[in-house]
Amino acid sequence: MSDRIHLTRIGYEKLKGEYEELTTKKRREIARALEHARAFGDLKENAEYDAAKNAQALNEKRIYEISERLSRADLIDDSDLAKDVILIGATAKLRDIENDEEFEYMFVSTEEADYASNKISVTSPIGQALMGRKVGEEVKIKVPAGILHYKVLKISR
Image 1 (spheres, helix red, strand yellow):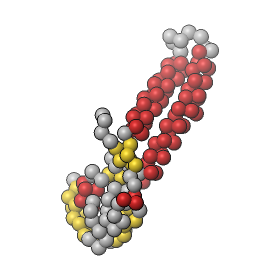
Image 2 (image 1 turned 30 degrees about the vertical axis):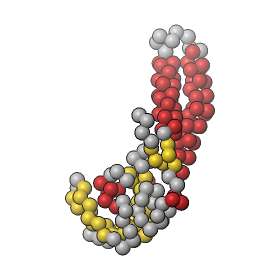
Image 3 (image 1 turned 90 degrees about the vertical axis):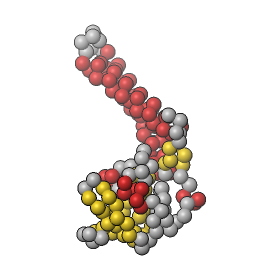
């Protein structure tokens, strides 16, 4: 797993913040929960102790995952990228030609993708089809639900 991953500054800071939260506040909370559970005595049949140990294991696993991602991260430098083309890190305002609705997507790496936040991966079918497009261009994208027909209205960074 030595592949580099590309992150926007926002995505990197979000991961770094989560790492800090888990290694400080969350670890202390879990330590307190373990201490509290130990006070009940016999650890073999102590549900609170088991729950706290499970929480500790999940927390340490997530810390490891984030640490590993951060160690492989390459920050995307927007200053080196064209401003008039959809590339990773860009936000594009699009119009759905079929229903005349407008919306925005930010194009990010797979690690940062979050459809609920309108952040789509550049490796998704929509992301791949829109990469390299400019304002005014129309594109038809084949997706499992059918064909999408979009027009690029604006590109920003």
